[in-house]
Length: 504
Picture 1 (cartoon, one colour):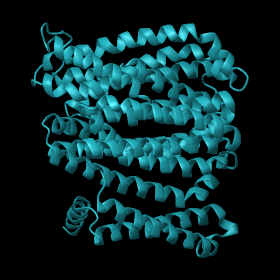
Picture 2 (tube, helix red, strand yellow; picture 1 turned 30 degrees about the vertical axis):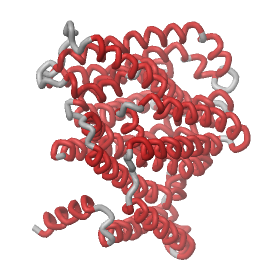
Picture 3 (cartoon, one colour; picture 1 turned 120 degrees about the vertical axis):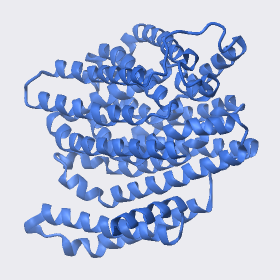
Picture 4 (cartoon, helix red, strand yellow; picture 1 turned 120 degrees about the horizontal axis):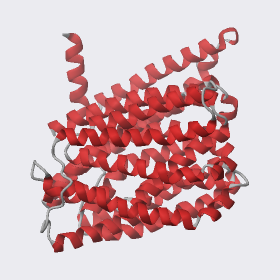
């Protein structure tokens, strides 16, 4: 667990440096330099490329994590890296063919409400292939228990280059077409950086070894990869929202949704590091049929994800009014507050329970997951179709929350009944009680204390003071209660070590 802890901490640091850059970029540069429609276009391009690249990978990432223990030899790992190059290439060719076949229909669908999306549709294959191999190379690094550099590339590097592109366009140095080319090309740069890092690690080979791993395992891997291709929609349901919104409500509302969802996405950032480093360990425990270790691992991951994600969501929500008041163009983007609330709760559910999906996928019952994926996908599509027309962007966020609730209810019930693995512990119940009390305290603060702090002559400054003081006092109180109640021995140990270092 030492390697996991070190890499998770380093990865989390990279994530939050990226969040700081992303916060500056999204809320103080992007909203100034791009219109709501242009923001909507960038969001739709990234979401569509993420969805299509996930499908084009043909389950490569999950297959690599699941079967790497059989390939691992500490040197070239029996050429598994070459397979992770070849399989996605096949998937991308299929996806490109579908792009070309349905090009006219897709353009016709988006042209009325999102003309920019229709105009720049031709850029989608390029950003898709870049994003696909960036993700493949990240997974190769993660199974080698080296996630820090790929995290820096994705969370920091891409954001820094995006920031430069926004400023160049916003100041008139480049036109919008060149901006879109640069925006897509940044993912190509990320791909190259991750590839160079893997080469430096010295544990990859472009040579496919004959006779290894054998026909039987290759068939098993192929079956698993095809199955995982059908299940990638589980992690990409939120991506459907911007695509549905772009077609039904137009790019401008999609842009407002995008800014709100950027805020909500902060909730699940910790899981990107912890999940990436925990999956290979869970896969090994499942392979060894060590049920006690699987239960211990998933309960730890789930509890700490719930703690961290709820705390982050709490800090965001108690300051949501101040955030939109300070945001350039905030009066427009404040329409997305309901998205932050509903989608934030969906992110809490997803980040704290997703480890259950990994357990099922690594087990011999992984095919059953296809049924749950079907429920998730169909629910998301039906809810988006029904709720967007009635509730607008709030309906799109609600569709995600409803779909996740249905999905995890079915999946976790099955995992417990068939695998005897449960994510739940008393620590999670205690966490929910603490956060419920904290929300009540924040509501009282906003009703009684905020009006006393706000000053009409110094509105901005008093707004910031109220947000900072409220966050420090209420957030600190939550941490103290978590510590005093001993919800997590790991958290208590971390706090003890930190206080000891401060005393020194």
